[in-house]
Image (cartoon, rainbow, N blue to C red; front, top):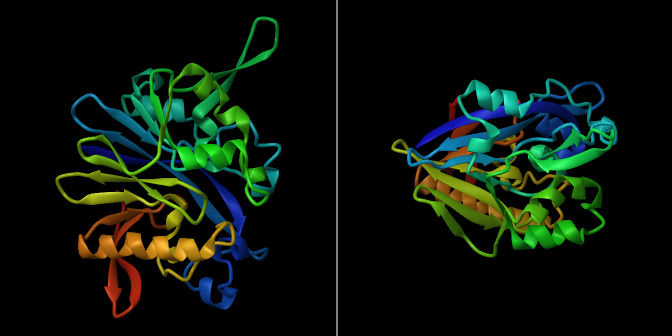
Length: 279
């Protein structure tokens, strides 16, 4: 089992939004921001090769289809994921599975791309034509019929071609994708977020997605204002962290521009980052 982290690009998000009710005097000691309260966030993907023919991509960043509509986020250093994968010996056609933690634009935007036709029109095509695309049914239903808080984060263009191709796989409960890769469901940030648990010979790595987006978010009470159900988020973080500490699992942070991965520890009733890994 081989795991490689890929940063598909970076963007700015408001610190108040990222840390919710936590005052800046507290969160600014753990995560830097600029004079306008902007925090730099990564868009992190994971490439997994299981050694038995499965090539799995977890999340794929914002892509480039909606950058003008999302100019508020000030995207920079965007990577063409096709080129990045090729540099690692993987063609888009080689990818067997795409796991989408959830369908907010910054996690699934590269799932489809615009292709210019001879008549000048644009056709949306799947970027990974041979891959099964794993999404939870709860997240898919929320994507099709979003609540008011999430509607601006969803773009049908990111997923319609996948649905039309028959390559969409919806899961309703925790599922094993292949030996060593389990897909587990967590609510709170959004319904039915998938957190892949990837087991290597060293340890299990948890791609926490927006359950724990930053190392600074390890504290269960530090909940983003983007989370639609904060009390649920709190309980789901506790569930993830209790297992991570007891089994010495490592957390991969999808949005942290400074810490990519770490183990966590529990001191009395508090959780904190333990050993950082640059994976």
